[in-house]
Length: 150
Image 1 (cartoon, rainbow, N blue to C red):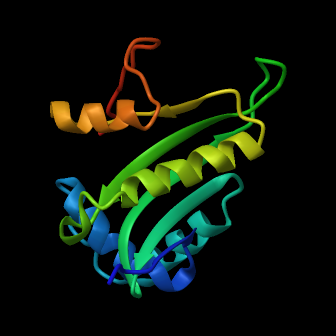
Image 2 (image 1 turned 120 degrees about the vertical axis):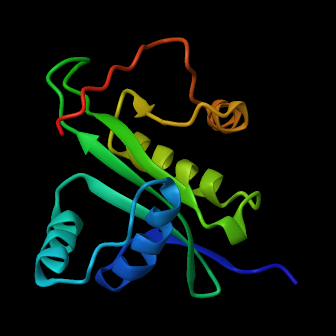
């Protein structure tokens, strides 16, 4: 029997499950629960244009990505969008959940009138890069630069 997948936006109660997912993104230890953390979480949830899509399987957060829609003065004043923090729990990989999250983000960006959707990844693994290409992203049009402010 196939598991039921629910795609939805993150809610306040999703914080601990989302942080557990983010711990699988690399060097992202789960932070201590605190009033500051909860305050930041509430700020993120209320932030205009900021969307966190959750793929939930049988009540468990199994995959997620963040979509940020950014107002813009170029390209006919159409916004653009950025996808970040794409992650699938190790127990749920290769089931199409991340693809579903990315499709959700793409549809949300289209509905918002965005003229482009960008995604950055720190992965150098060819399988991961191929996954993003299969999802419709390309690595030919732009060059990304990052300046770490640490």
